[in-house]
Length: 426
Image (cartoon, rainbow, N blue to C red; front, top):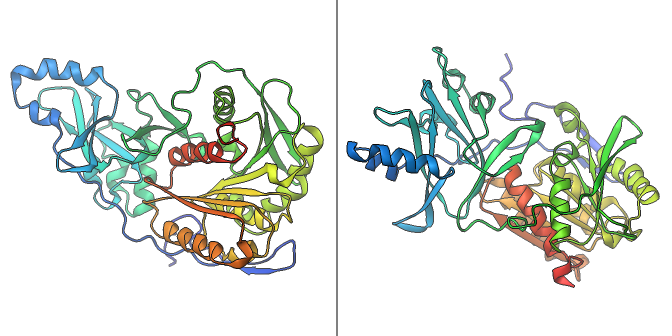
């Protein structure tokens, strides 16, 4: 009997692809995950103080008056922080914290809150890097039966069970929309890489978003900035079904704040999981859709620049390597790419990039992503060290985080704000 896949794509038959320029590329097998991070629990200040019964009423009021998580520096190590969550759940039988990237699926009890004696409060305190940005969700289990995260076996089943029963934290003000429309809360340590929109205007002028139907049952959403503009830059995003939910509002804010120039964004739908694996991340599929259909249609119907140097393509995970394929195969149609957590295990894309015309490649990978970071570092070194890439910009930006939409969202706007045509860089 065949064993169940350990992660998406595991167990698929490997394929051979001929790209649009006639070069053949052989798909590779993903490597098993290694060195999974563990949740390092510590006793929080609230747990210690709760031993004094006379203080409990004041402690409860104070804990519920501040947002989650409460972050304090670790006295033993300034690079670490003590992050505490508090939940009021009088009818709960168990409460669980799912965090990306630190979730102990092998010992899920480490992710369960402790109930404070004689109260409806549950709490957990983790020792985490002070530079970490992470999405998280909280599960409050009220049934008599055991929660599914305790009875599931294996990495993915445990994680999926935890995510299925969890929800965003209503005591955290920041959220992020991820795959499948799932909303998670966002925690960021005091030293986390900045989100350029953290203090942007609350009520900027609103742009518009239109649905663009493409051949082959493909579709995209095209964001247009408010006002009248000609020859704007164009950003192309894979996994547009995720980005379309909150990117337009963030673009409005970034443009109004002068962080970005007025620009258009084309967000290509990835469809369901099986189609995403088949069509995204390969040197054909959605790469061809972007180059043959999406960019020409946007240039025809929207007032965007016709210069390749004004086009950036970006994607995450499978979309990250798809972004690299796009710039490699565009023959100058796309000048720049921001590849976030690219799935470089799937293909060797270096040769195609070295043979191509492009201006800049920025790789962003989380420090909690294991081999993804080392593979991105190897690619950056290979490109930067080859004479064929002389005069072009290759950058690797590690971020303290995981394979996480919270990290990608902040990183995308950080990269866009650092681009030469951003107002601050002119």
